[in-house]
Amino acid sequence: MTAPATSADTLTDLARKAGIIGAGGGGFPTHLKLSLAAETVIANAAECEPLMAKDSCLIEREPDSIVTGLRLAGEAVGAKRLVVAAKPKRETAWRALQTAVGEGVELYPLPDAYPVGDEVTLIKLLTGKTVPRGGLPADVGILVQNVETLANLSRAGESPVTNKYVCVVGAVKKPLATVVPIGYPAEILVRLAEPEPATVVLEGGPAMGDPVDPVEAHVAKHTSAYTVLPENSPVIAHLRSTLALNRRRSLTACIQCRLCTDHCPRWLTGQTVRPHLWMRALCLGTGFDRLAGDLWGCCACGVCELYACPEGLSPRKVALQLRERMPQPKRDEMEPGDRPLFGERHPPTKRLMGRMGIGDYDRQVEWVEAPPTERLRLALLQGTGHPAKPVVKEGDEVKPGQLIAEAAAAVGVPLHAPVEGTVVEVTERHIELEVR
Ligand code: SF4
Ligand code: SF4
Image 1: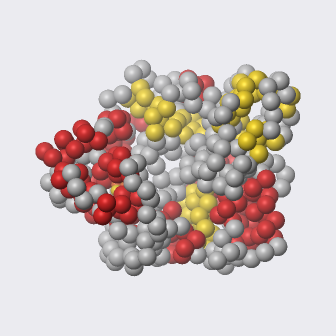
Image 2: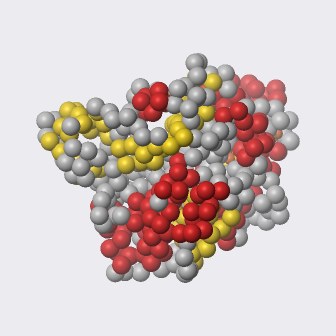
């Protein structure tokens, strides 16, 4: 099913030319999402990972852009229902949205639980529909977009995406949020927040982030946060566990209580995602092939290992390790199951933070102006899809908003210079600019 023509085609084209991708972390090219019809568009302001703050800061600064982007997206896909889903707990942002939403836009209050911002969970909450395992929100007539993506969409015809809202949280003296040019060094942001000694930096939130070397990492269009955690944090232990270690631990400790499955948000929406079964298969060393759909249905939220498992095992990490060895199966055609406890079993954020050992880091972030940088390093692959192809060479002078790499495939977006400067390096992976 494709979306209606005319204005939809125009917005889709503008989004593609502006290089817009999902700004909440997924990084999927927005023009592809806009090319599918939907009855409902949801602006996702859940910001459900603990400690996260960049969306709240964006909402406080430009709520009208979000609503404009939502209306444009709704028109493009032919939607009848437009919803902003946010948490009343974030009082300033909630009030800003109450003022900004006008006629024809609902403001939906989300519980302060994790992971209500997972789009499959969000869709179930707002519409009662279950996205098929391995499918897309468009399969049930829904489009979900992060609020920053919608703000970018509101100015798609005027300016490409060259800036990013981002926060630095966790084991730091000064948790902060700011907006920086794409390609900005993570190292400067982390240093600005004054990290505690003996810590690890994750790109993303504490539940779903991945460890990065801040010296090498640079802000991309889908970067939402850098989370600093102590090296001895249980979160880091899960992330560093190997498959062999997980098997040894599971053999001695997995009691097949199935709490990992009973609390799994994807299972609770009605999808067939059963982590206790792949933990059993891991112990037995067989039966993985039959579980490929389950393994690929995992959204890596971490509820099973960070909250549910009484034995401290790592079903999420095991799923990510096992599915590296098997192709992703096609979309599930089976009917979703009935899960009466959906809505009752999502971990309250405070309790989750307690179990993760990060409750002490739940502090107000400060909005700061990031210091200027001499260099920007822009990755050619921003988010999901194919890397962009450079159209500049070393020594070229560039202006703000100038195209520096073009989309090389349908699933990909172009890249634009955020500032005036000189191209000093072009590799297979990035373009580096010296800022004027
Ligand atoms: S919750 Fe832990 S102990 Fe229980 S089945 Fe899952 S992995 Fe095994
Ligand atoms: S990480 Fe665990 S809880 Fe989350 S979707 Fe995967 S199996 Fe379910």
